[in-house]
Image (cartoon, rainbow, N blue to C red; front, side):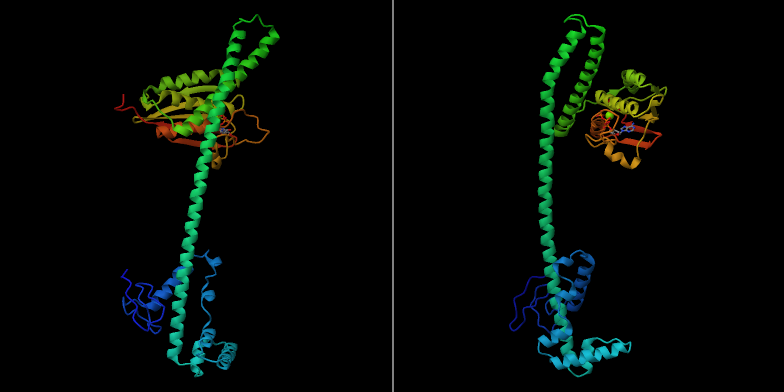
Length: 393
Ligand SMILES: Nc1ncnc2c1ncn2[C@@H]1O[C@H](COP(=O)(O)OP(=O)(O)OP(=O)(O)O)[C@@H](O)[C@H]1O
Ligand SMILES: [Mg+2]
């Protein structure tokens, strides 16, 4: 933009929107920068009307910004009331005959106003409209700036709340660990017969106690893992890992649960599976979670299958089940912490809804994507492609 030149004497307070040069009310072209003032005004009006459809509440519709031409001429003493009424009457008459004519033109035709005076008045109106539009734009910008500041503030509060939540979970979980250690200690003493023999009835009650304690322990470990990872991020210990061994270990650890739920659990593995560059403990934990879900959400007599295939040096592992499935458009909800699809009080499946949130965190940290397929009533498949250990081992 050109520098704002000083104001020549005798000029009005209207300035060029391009260079700020003070304009005379007759000016159609800016004497300083040469811009076509009519065109500027029309373009500003159009961009305003097209660009800010929701800005109406700022009272900036063009009609609201400029008086109609008849009122303008009257207010500026360029015509009198009788002349205006006569022109309006004439306009009504010809529009009743199906013709259309602008009021300004009628005033000229009736000799009430000179064509040059009318042109000047229209020019003035456009310029004042342009000034009003500029003000409306400035007001919009102010509003956008205010909203941005509010959103920034809300984001800050949300981040703070998230931090407090993670701290709370971490503190509570750590506090739960101490009494749990004592419970576990006594369970081991009683189970080992150190505190005297148990009757058959006591033993069956003791089994329930042991299982409940182990579930509680897992839950607390998950909570600690989740809150620590959310606060500090996960630290991986990646290395070249033999995937066949990892998969078979996961199957072996889940076998008891599958048997108890009357689910057939099997692995389909190729002859050769390349090594992957991963944190073995974390990825085994991911597989255990996926198998745990597959067993949990599959009715008795169903099947859970772990399959591995290799494409080049990349290995893809999938965990499929023949269970209840879910609508695929709800996939995102699966990964929300503490969220279960069947969240009603009548839900039959245990768990806290943390498993897949942690799975996602672990896979994200590895840079691995989890692919999900599912169909209600037919089953689900969760698959992941693991990075090769080429050059890393
Ligand atoms: N294989 C599956 N079949 C059907 N629904 C599933 C399957 N896996 C996960 N879901 C749905 O996703 C939800 C979240 O799974 P997630 O593993 O995070 O929690 P959870 O298994 O309910 O509890 P947790 O893993 O903490 O014990 C489940 O509650 C279930 O609604
Ligand atoms: Mg789970």
